[in-house]
Amino acid sequence: MDPESKPQVLVVDDDKVIADTLAQILIIHGLPAVATYSAQGAIQLAAIQPFDHLLSDVIMHPMNGIELAIAFRRLYPECKILLMSGNNDTSHLMREASALGHDFEVLAKPVHPQLILDRLCNDHRAE
Image (cartoon, rainbow, N blue to C red; front, side, top):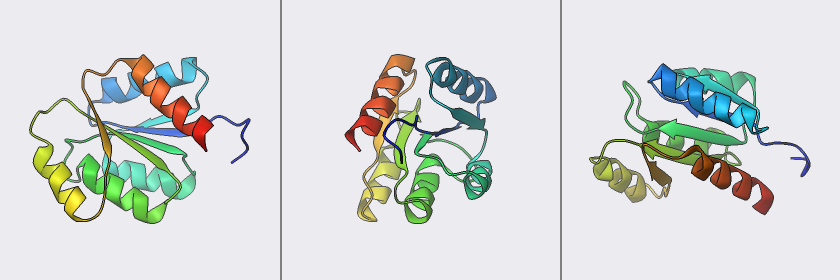
């Protein structure tokens, strides 16, 4: 990726208001972002357009955000992954992912948009 380019962000949350709001905040701050409302939608979009970052909710059905993150790691190994959860009971999902050799950062919802921007921009600058 060109160091001067902005990272393309895919925002995934089954709560449409959250997904759309986060995508709009990222766009306002100069990061190209697209929102989708399911893990399957994310996989379909990523097959058409490459993304540098995946920002996903954890608790979604039928495919949760951890399963989506694992699929993205396998399909798009260069994509940076940042997860969010408003549910305190995601530790079992994280343990399952860890047992499979995956380590994902999970931010607690409600997450301040500046924290997301910092994570996305710092990850991009570090590349």
